[in-house]
Length: 299
Image (cartoon, rainbow, N blue to C red; front, top):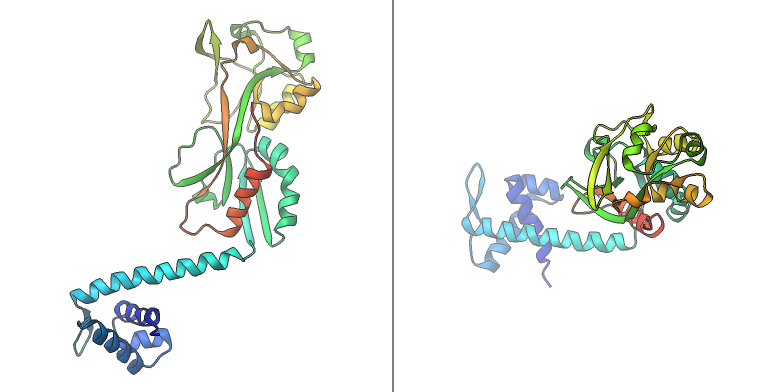
């Protein structure tokens, strides 16, 4: 059976390099072998693919059409071989991961040893930050993000959804009293985040209508974990994700307040990554692992 794919590769190289000699050098063949291959294709098709001059080669209309189809076929062959090769390959290499501090501390780090044991040839480089990073600029492979997704360049896998709760430590409530209405928070120390992207207001359901309220306090932080620790220390009131503080709620270290005014807002979590035609094995394996072992269970 003729090696049609091999012939196509020779022709594509001739078209791209512009000469038999240059194509022969790239393919490690003799110029005469390249010339014979092109002549054999033309004889089989019954058309001329190249206009030969003393200085250069030019594609005919038929040659342009053959080049386009041949290039597509070779790309398909490459994709088939790549996918089959990856099926038995092992993830390896450096994997740069960015995650919010609460998620990293409470969801990712506890299960990361399992991933490293499963894929020992992957080097996981983790950065925990509640700031939203640009995956392109930071060269991160995977990031875990909370809230709406706005970057259309990225692919995403859902990791779950968490309810949000306004909480305080029992010691704080004993010293300052428990707020009975959202407006009462104006007299309390409200713990804030210092993100520029995050507005300093919160939504409450008041008389059946969701209304926003703004509050002040003497502490701002760059991560939810810092806010949690200050709330545990009795410094003030905070609004945090349930997945982050569930153990504190269960143990009574933090107490939900103003639940009658909770609008039922939730925050979605996604693993996001740059969309490539050929996703690396280590990224694919890590994202699958997050979905399996580090998802967030509602509410």
